[in-house]
Length: 338
Image (cartoon, rainbow, N blue to C red; front, top):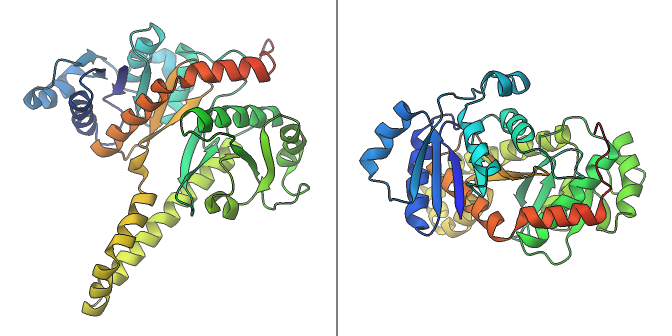
């Protein structure tokens, strides 16, 4: 496999990216790892680590900053590390691209350079969340499209089901529509209009779901618009951090609670692992005609290594080919102007 890592994406680039790329190249000697970034910043960190031969550095003179406006920057900066990395995918030199950079920039570059899979109206970001049963639930869209139409959500459902089936191994994914109530009539206009379309989609649609069903393990794929999904994602992250921070503070408050913490350490370690976003590292941008994974700006080397592992798993499962087949079979061709 051939994986590309954007060396200039994370908040503390390029050190975490360099460390993750070297680790990945050593972990998977049969793969090729491309590290794309500015030569004067990357090489002084890379060379002392004596990277193996399967790690290849590619120079990119420009950086897509977090403050850059996606639409105009794609054309104004054609040689960012994002653009150079995605061109490797476009030209068939690599199988997947990973970045912890600007999400809007990743989406804009992906649309401009790779385009959409035929039949896809809007790409969607899909993210895994832990469930009470110990598994995962996928939520799509978590930030690519703030404004959505019902047909977009139906496409998200199809793409999410394919991801759940072929990457996570769920035989018949249960699809739910995120709403403020389980009843069919609940929700805003978008949810109400989407419900009957999902009911007729041929998917294993189980109806509206609330967050309690989402985290309860009663559904495999949850569909929503990007604005709601992004708020859901950030709220979940904030609550998880609050709980772990408060627990840690209280457990270290006195000798007695410290003893209790020691006895309960295996349970707390399990909880910490469940809530750790570094397990996944990055989430795929489904619907793009190429595999693009986007991680958090706060990603460290462990998170970026996990992101490369997630991308590698997607390549191995032939995710892109499965998505193309599913969309061609189940969704209408893209109309002119969509």
